[in-house]
Image (tube, rainbow, N blue to C red; front, top):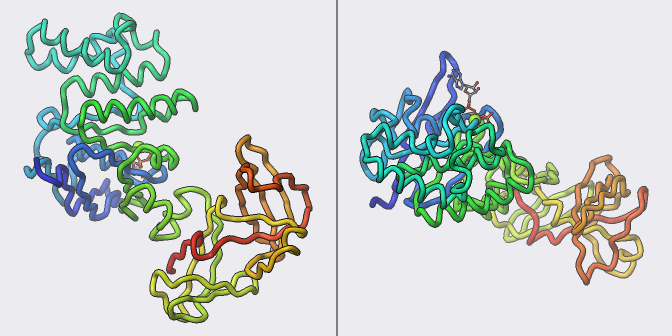
Length: 364
Ligand SMILES: Nc1ncnc2c1ncn2[C@@H]1O[C@H](COP(=O)(O)OP(=O)(O)OP(=O)(O)O)[C@@H](O)[C@H]1O
Ligand SMILES: [Mg+2]
């Protein structure tokens, strides 16, 4: 097996005058769980369709295990796709839905039965195999769609938002089941979602897409902690964003936020005069009461007023309005060190963070 099991090289796609994919380059390892993440319309389904052979690119090539498959029809690719809307055959029962692809391949009846039963037991549908799709819940139908795709033993499984129709709990369960299934089968998964939490929790690597381009490729941690652009920072998780300018450079840089000067380590070799975005995640914002501020020597803090308090069980989400009118989103966790977790609306507070640790700098 080639190390780069799937290679997408210089792929572009137009529909009419509109360019949908722009020079996509992506290498995927064998057995990897890779997620394409991006807003609606950014080209995720189109890219999956090109990988599966249901669409042709205008430019570029797709390689599977070192061989180009760009001109090979879908049924000969060893790549199977689970579609956004499952597309089950309504008149066939679960067993026949899963067996359909094998029946087209002239495989013996007993072998088909063995294969289908094995896959149905993996996705825990053995007891429901005589039911029709309309007698199943959304989650069960979704498992039929997955069983139908894996029964052919593909090398690659493409999953187009397979969990989007499920409720919160079923979705969480299916996320774990899918991950386990992938480990058990050892096949490469290319998964599509526009849910960033789902992408972060399931993937080995994430490709963040924006308007037909891959904006950033990296592990969930890299994408979350070191977003390469404002689009990625905003798309992955909530972000407080300040626009500023580098005042002094060197080992540390300084910049102003709300007329207060902050300094951080110059991790990105920025130079004086450069415009930057400073991104701080809500969980990295600390909120201090006036009393707490009096007892410390904190200088790098901004005054504000509590505007909204949302109790969430294990956290409290606050909206603090700064003097300039800018809203800051802060998530405070319940833990033993944190004495204060009761906030009043209109209470005067200070917000701060540990700049070196928790500030993400994005160049403009
Ligand atoms: N067959 C087609 N003909 C013309 N335009 C198309 C066709 N298929 C897709 N498009 C356009 O290409 C763009 C990308 O579509 P695509 O389905 O790949 O988006 P997506 O990222 O999967 O979005 P979603 O999250 O909503 O499923 C959209 O603007 C869509 O309207
Ligand atoms: Mg889509």
